[in-house]
Image (cartoon, rainbow, N blue to C red; front, side, top):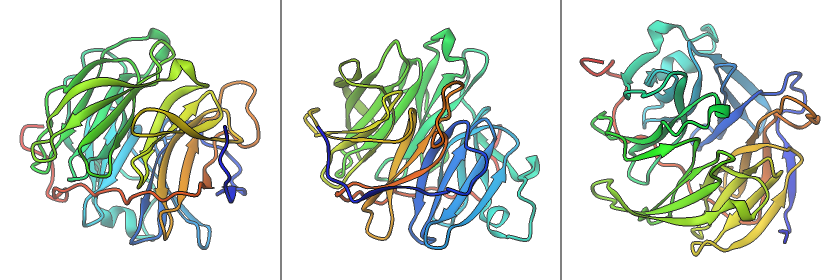
Length: 319
């Protein structure tokens, strides 16, 4: 099964060093710019496709997922908690590309039940609450100490709302906001679930199997939901993007020139481009692994909702 597409384009062909773990692409419409991270490099990247201008920032610790509030302040899910970085510390081109600890304001932190954990996949729901999950970084341990959390507009971090996750991934929300998707991409799991979502309270219920990726190539990594309500997942280790209908049926796939696509997000002026990050494997990597791609996939996506709270007021008391 394949999809007729216009093109697949590598965005940074001149980049000498590929990303070890490219993740969390996010399109900023007001800037017409794409942001993403390289987790082990502790870097945030920004690219404007129109002119190819690229910038990067290095953080004090690994950042795996992020969003922005309405003012442009960054909200980052990192190794030791959730952090804010004021927009002025990112926007001023005259400043250093290194974000120091004084600029990295911790907002909240979960109780990590195991050593070597960090946040992993995250994004905002349609109402602007930030959802993010945790994982043990050493995947060979297959530890199920990971959990899913909600960070609301009042800057309150919830208790674990889904627990016993090995490698939390695949967060997405239906266009009407009433269905939430979540995956566990660990080789021992390879499952995507759907939940009923209360848009007023942010409560989730009715967890059910949406897709068993053991039936398809790859593992369900980062995801995006298009304007038709279909769920796109990066098939890590499968070199593919797979699209599933709201009923959980595979209806489209796109073969990519990378072995480990990691996350996708819609963007571009018409939101008709699917931006895809990738991971560079430790062995047998090809020339495209670890780079970022723009895929014209023939459908439209939806803008990501910014974080609904205010971030530039310093850390939460007691954190």
